Amino acid sequence: MKQYLDLARHIMENGTLKSDRTGTGTKSIFGYQMFFDLKDGFPLLTTKKTFLKGIIHELLWFIKGDTNIKYLVDNNVGIWTDWPYKNYMNSSEYQGESIKEFSDKIRQSDEFAKKWGDLGPVYGSQWRNFNGVDQIEYILNTLKTNPDSRRMVLSAWNPAEISQMMLPPCHTLIQFYVVDNKLSLQLYQRSGDVFLGIPFNIASYAVFLMMVAQVTGYELGSFVHTIGDAHIYTNHFDQINLQLTRTPRRLPILKINKSITRLEDFKYEDFELVGYDPYPPIKGVVAV
Image (tube, rainbow, N blue to C red; front, side, top):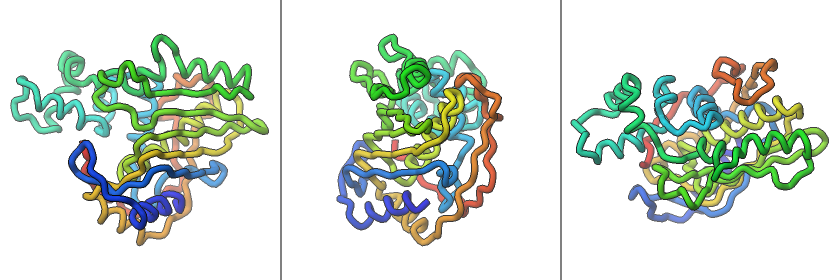
């Protein structure tokens, strides 16, 4: 996608070197916005193969209100495992297990998963129970009864519970907007890891927009992605520069099961990606 490459190029050419929480170091800019019209295709990165299975399972996990990685691990999705594994490594119960062995324990033991797999009140908890408010239910009801409302906002940033979260939310606030029977979504993301995280975030919120549009009866509009601190970690410079040599290919199409009328009823099998022709994947280490 040209929008993504423009962001990466802008950071590499104009960003400022900064220290960060992980000790890795970043090149960073503050304030950036991208627009994706979903009639142009599904915005899944083509300059490297992107893990759509993980994106969809993570989104379904959020919608369920789940905060334990067991659902993800059971579906062979490891995108959240680093944080509870690091927590486990710092405990007296750690016996030198690898992250794979840790994941196997999560998969095999509900008791172990309950103790070591929960991330605290992260996205799913805030979406479905923000101080007692089910924000998803509120959004869906408002879209059906008052689509001109300017209050269709979903927040994952709950200051009262940040200290209880293993990783405070990066994609913090969502707003829906309806015009001419088309539903659009804007995401404000306080912090964006451009190599590893941003491709996931773009695709995830595009899927979410498609799901919400379907169950509320709207056509698809645009996804607007606004980022606060947009950064590239110093150990991802080579990977980003490789992508900048690649020409974006035609966007794929994501088909979803048209029979689904409730957001909670979607399953992974209800999604089909058509025409995805990416370049080979590029690996990078996540900064924890």
